[in-house]
Length: 254
Image (cartoon, rainbow, N blue to C red):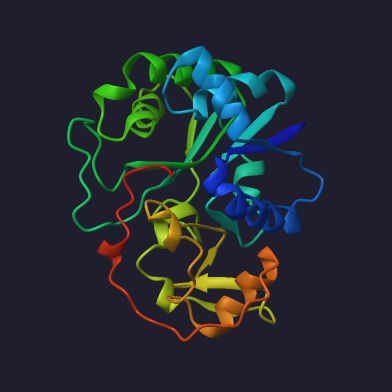
């Protein structure tokens, strides 16, 4: 099955994008990774106006592969993403995670079930096209734009879906581990990051101000070391600081 991964990275996300791809390629060197840069965004703006981009660029790539994966540029892949690559599904997503004060008002989907658009995968061109068309038409109607629309599509019953990190599962993806990073630890000679007995597959710094992304002070030093190794960061290990989950509102997928 031919697989392609992609994300959208404006100029202010370029540094995160480079590091994120290093971490992705550490585990999946054979999967092509497409970056839609600021110039691509500018071209899309001329055609569509100001709008979110996931569905637009996803629909552009979907004909080129059997599985298309969108992973936000402000993410770090910490392990093999086999839950994404394997399984009988048409559309997959990740939980937004517990977040004090976060509300999905107007979406009709509970906080526990609500998904974050920082990682989305699909085997269907039709899904990406639907996300694109509904985003262009309705994104301004919702507090979280294309992410709310993604949740509507995911839970519509139209597609065979998969939540990659269900609460009862054994992995964390995206932002679902946020607020607990101080409790992470490593096993397997420092090569696996764990939390609550579950493997941390992807960390997503969702919703933070750009200058605070990829700030690892919440992680224990040994976990910081593993993350920095994955992204090629040679800066010194920082002293750990425990912060409250509410510091990171995760409404937006990016």
